[in-house]
Image (cartoon, rainbow, N blue to C red; front, side, top):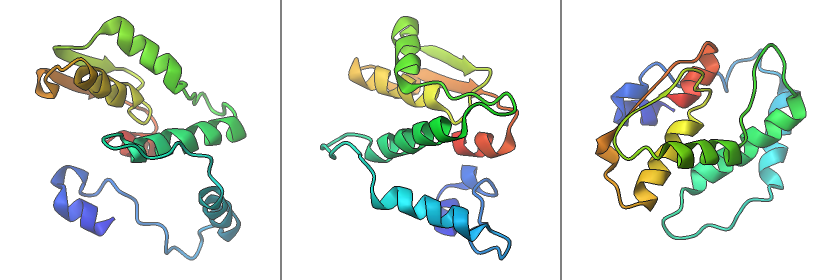
Length: 138
């Protein structure tokens, strides 16, 4: 985490470093590790965003396991992809008023690249009320 922040100034102070806290629930930490031991993930292909696919997979699994508590909702990747296809964000701004972890932004970038557009022609803006989720989007 420290190395990521050092290399990317926009992430300074955003990434949590709570993995060494004594009050961290060891049972939960064990459950997270078990998720990584037996994942059913797509095979890596040249040029694909494998980390993004892994993240989406685990986020989906978390949403299924935890349900919708406290007004927090997970929008399935297929729904976000459909919205992006309808919006066709080739140029201008993409604004997501409830950006969650930033899926709309990731899919917008993929759309632009898939259609041979210029990534720099699109600006992304979003807001999120949950500070932890906002950090993920950032």
